[in-house]
Image 1 (tube, rainbow, N blue to C red):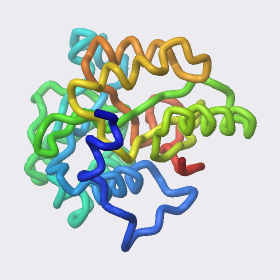
Image 2 (tube, rainbow, N blue to C red):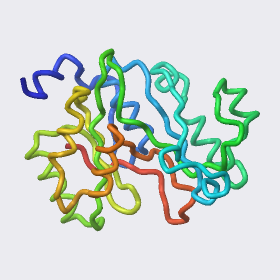
Image 3 (cartoon, rainbow, N blue to C red):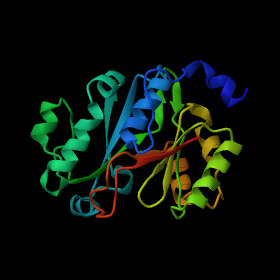
Image 4 (cartoon, rainbow, N blue to C red):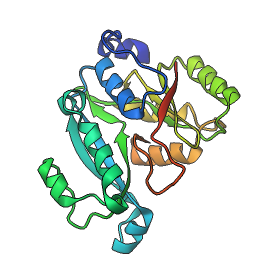
Length: 230
């Protein structure tokens, strides 16, 4: 069975919202939720500054903490904005335990300063599925953007291309069945436009991550923004 046939019942047509070029990643996440009404929650990943990891001795596979946000929190109660706000206003980007407790969130007591927030591809709708995600590693030029569009169209992908600051990100609008997440990534192995380290790390983890906030550890970093729809 093709991905399109398998996922067609999960897609609803765009109705009330208009996706505008320049919208930040958090608005694209919300649009993906609207297009896939069976997703009941998302896992946010809070990533610490690398120096903080070295200080407290976190292992490589413990380099973030997951926090679950419900669909209702994200769409109705501005849940994503809570974390964007925290990262943007606290000194040294430290996640404040008192603020987190007030929000009803739970982080390890020794959690260090945070650099950015990402979203995990694995969702439940209600069965396991993945939001297709790709991280590109090419110069931000109009020619490369067109090459990305052509590549995605040739694979019949639908979704959103964002300016990540360094290059581009892709967020798919169609969910991929949980057992086909690796197959989706494998299509882009050896593609010179795609970050191959990202592909290999994602395959080893069993899921992908894409950043939705500025990376506070990099002065030139921006919150990813929409540049094209495919």
